[in-house]
Length: 400
Ligand SMILES: *Cc1c(COP(=O)(O)O)cnc(C)c1O
Image (cartoon, rainbow, N blue to C red):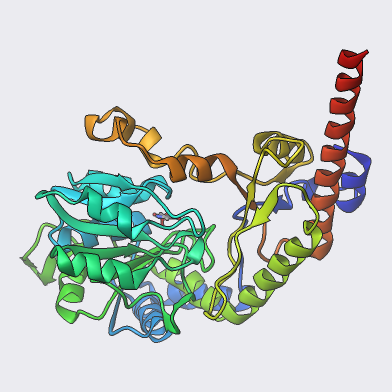
């Protein structure tokens, strides 16, 4: 570790992991502890207890939908929604997403068919979808990557034209709007993640939001083994329930929503300033006129213009205990079991491959501030200066 980093960290190794993509945000600890005490006093720990119910109500308000079903995580939420919507055969998804998007389908014995993304926002390309539709296609599972909503209008048109179910993986997009309306109410249903690393966390958790009360009712049964009543099982169900402590964490963090957006936004702006002159580095901009959570600070490194490769920059910062990272690399279509499937291994996804090779995600959230961000940029500027000098020296020698 360099001297400068040690100084920045106050010389205390305990802080050496202070900068880490996905470090959890934690709301008012006293409020959380009070809720935990109440839960323990009540001895009602799970099975749609009062805290889960309150969390669902607050979520429905925030997302402006009729129904929210809290679940144990977003992966199970996606599986429940896939099954409840009757999706089977093939479902079209982006490859540039967390592997759980594809796995949730495959776990339901439904084949993910990978579509390419758009270069400018890393979201699924509606034009690419149409080319992949076959008689086996039953739906589209689109991802609001980095919280930036996909082109929902275009997807609605495609889904309607081909009679496909439209489901959204909104894991990144809590508190993000699309044309002034919160993500959560689009398509047949949307699924959010409250995993520890997400904008709002419930330790582990997730929810399904929908404006279809019948679908919601079925999902509630399915989440609880298919129980419709005391001893009446009406569906094939699973255990997808959220527990009370998770809901307490989720509720508490939800109360800090405005503060967390402000913190993320300030960090987002600090990154733009600190890296304004960095060669070959471009940040993905925030949407211009819509609410946004600023949870992901995403840059792309164009190696033609940058003296160091993306992965070299990552190595330099990891040496300094600053854990920036590439993301979704190398794409779901290049991971098992999909890589070995004949339907996937001849698929060309040039934009996905290109974005996978360029993306660099920076730490943000309440454990990061302007000083830390300037520290990160300082180290990176220093690294490219050194790389330039080395290059020059090599050129000189080969010219001599
Ligand atoms: C985090 C994430 C998931 C999985 O969420 P869990 O709650 O951890 O199951 C799914 N899709 C995307 C895009 C994610 O980022």
